Image 1: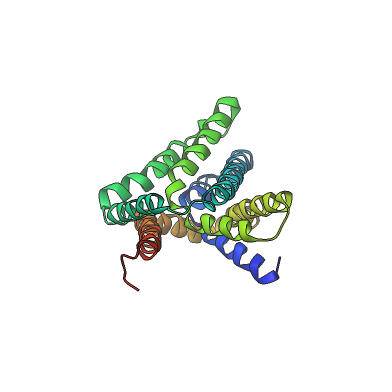
Image 2 (image 1 turned 90 degrees about the horizontal axis):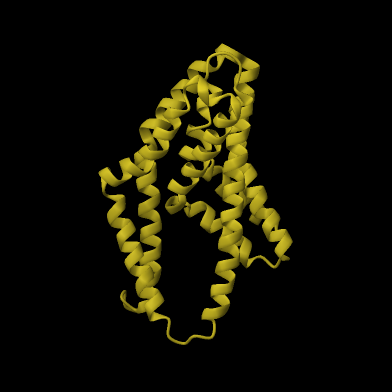
Length: 236
């Protein structure tokens, strides 16, 4: 695989690293009073990375199997019409402030549940952290545009299955690196960096709805546009 392709994958992973699940929620433990709460932070990030890697592996296998199955089908208009309808629906949802507020707000509410001391100690706390990671990934499934692009790139690469899965695992690791770097910075610089981190946290929280809406809109536009062109709805 060319270095430029690897650079594209890394860039997509860094875009994914700014989501609620990969950055906003981890800041809970980075900004807690006192030392960085490393155990719950690492548990959360490991759970998110593992979930993304597993989802990517499933989508990769399903996508390749579906492509092979559809290769021998002459008429796939039904699939294209479904794609078109899904794209239009996502576009409509993207312009709904109420829906976007619920999508982004759900993950933020789970984040707020972790702000108490009971979220950092004990087995029940670990289960709560893992559950929050699972919910965050599930909520963000419809907004996985960068990840879907990365999966398509990996699927198109002339690589063995093991190498493809390793790339998806590496992608998931890169996704959580910014949160880890912020935690290391907080541990090293202490109170000196806290104001900057709190401003970042506040800005990401304020922009969560808007960023989610943009991703929904982009995904919807690409799906509907591609299907419309394939169906001849846009002319020659």
